[in-house]
Amino acid sequence: MVTGAAGSIGSELCRQIANFQIASLILLDQDETGIFNISEALKDKFPKIKKYSLVLDIRDKEKIESIFKELRPQVVFHAAAYKHVPLMEENPDEAVKNNVFGTKIVAEASIKSGVEKFMFISTDKAVNPTSVMGATKRLGEMICQALNQKNHTRFISVRFGNVLDSRGSVIPIFREKIKKRESIEITHPDMQRFFMITSEACLLVLQAGAMGEGGEVFVLNMGNPLKIMHLAREMIRLSGLEADKDIPLVFTEPRPGERIFEELLTDKENSSKTKHEKIFIAKLSEVDENQLNLSLKKLESNLYSLREAEIKDMLKEIIPNYRPKF
Image 1 (cartoon, rainbow, N blue to C red):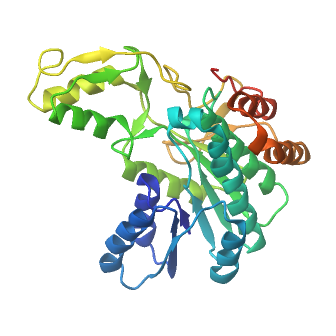
Image 2 (tube, rainbow, N blue to C red):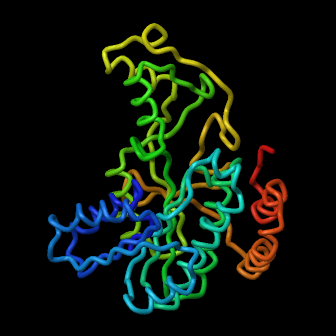
């Protein structure tokens, strides 16, 4: 099963997984058109694989549990998430509902139905998070760590940075601006990010999944970070134009929740090597499952009555290294 199967990562995972001799593939997403597109793309190329294309919300607990009970997936790749940082700053309740409680619903359904491995797709924004999105993804990692401690299902998380040309990333935005000869906005001249192509990121996720024994948070070696300003200038140059002459570069301010640099590990997290040169294991402290469950119950019961700042305060109580920018 791949949740978020219509997204950039989810759809590429589907394509790569289908190359293996699997009996069936369950594609799950709330994006109807996206599910249709990836289903059609897989239909002709992999005719022997039984495919289930499901349009539903991961927060629908009864439906999720029913699907797991009926279809009994052996391996789950959980890629479904709200990912846009500034948007989630404005909608922290939705980020929590989807990225935290949606993850919890899918994870617990996996345990009930006897899933062998559960792969949680995480992000470098979960490290010392400054955004709601990053905090909710770190909380997703913590849920996986806690559930792994006493159940048959092996939970594994994989962190990586930005994926080139994914939906909503800077590359398609810059490309469209260049096409229209419009100015490109860059939030800060020193803004930089880790980048990796989608196919490589997904291949490494599959390799981490094969290596994982349960409880790990794997970190992908993303190489050196790239300055967004340099990326914009190079894209303009490759289009046969000149930056600041044909296409103006305009510097603004970092948007809500954004930071200048991303990290793949906190100062307190060391990493150890694996047999793959691009995959490392973060050494994290154990998660107190009882305390985590109490905190999640408190967050869930108050979520509909809390204001944005109060939701961030509650997240900070659960994740001490979360540093929200109010």
